[in-house]
Image (cartoon, rainbow, N blue to C red):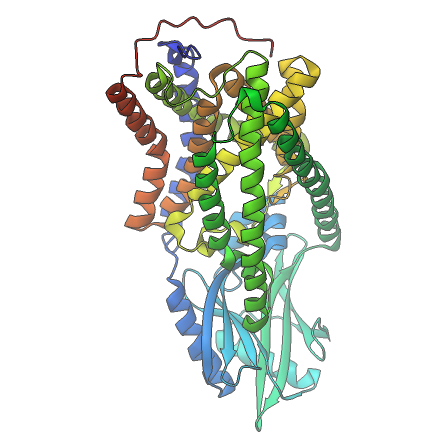
Length: 545
């Protein structure tokens, strides 16, 4: 008989769930709705196809060449986005400069007929105006004076405000950086990376990329924080995940009498499929993160990534599989069965109660997370930047983006909670102590998200992770996995709803409701198989946390 969850256990958490759900809606949802309603363009992003058409038309007009292919990806100025967020200048920038110099654009990658020449055109995501371009063409590069003249002519045509131009050597070979007085936000000033080439007999402004340059000290700080995050992720998460994977194989063999190698195959298969979909779906994000890379080179990179993704998916699936088997063995050897079997009496009711608790716990965490961020903002000055690799506009197909939630929920709960806590509890003989290290390893896997200082997510996820650990130890693996999946699905689904579209909205709602659907099916199956016998709960006191 499964005795992990009492029939009325949900009553302990319902009030906290209601309060923190209200906090989540008030802090996270309402401001986004208000901002969207007040947005100059109603928050409506143009289709990628429209951006591609704008880019093709401009490129062919400027160069006289024929565009053979075009591909739009969401691009963002991460440094500027972070600086504006840190200095509380986002609203001022949007009012003054976003129409001409948007932080976020569609970067349209172009290839010209012949295959050797290529370029990039940057299109405003809301008003579809071209805001910059960069062509890599054969042709003589003209002098800085001629480039300045071309830039001046273009600026006059666009009727920018008057300001003194100053020219200095640019980042590109033979290019120039043109500064324009009067365009400043905080300590960041406007600089136009420009270049003029002779195409045929015509001088063409082949590069025109305006951007606000952040202060050097801010840039150095971000570089150091990104480097720190890389080390923390590589050692604390990558290396320790590898070590846990090896240990999972060893303990799966050592404790095989308590488990079965047939156990967990279905869930591992689900993880493998979702993980492959997740990684293949963010290829546009990977392409955007490469900056101005030719589509030919980008194609090679993407083929390499596809191969790497498949190999990594196999390795990750193996880690999940052996973690499930080893975790089952470790917990049963310690007298706990935290993942009941399908045919056990009361299984259907257990899953149903797990699902109910999971929605309450997810509501609690959704409200708690923004409160943690607000506290960290006050204590360590936390701020966020942008990340094109996780942008919904770089996910294909977008409606499948919520599989991210399930891939993470399955793997992280299996490896770090089911196996990780079981392993360290076997070593330390204390549940709370056993939860700390796996939670730390898990949290370190998230420090490369664009939040600064880089330790921001470490602090946040140590709190969230210990809550997941409590849920897992107290109510079992299914409750923890469902909670994690709902928590992630709401976060990802919110992005889909803001993007809009019937399919995206339907998908986001469906994935949030998926634990309910799964629990209902399993409960009905248990009833028909007569394994869902009445449960007289005999829950023993929770073990020391």
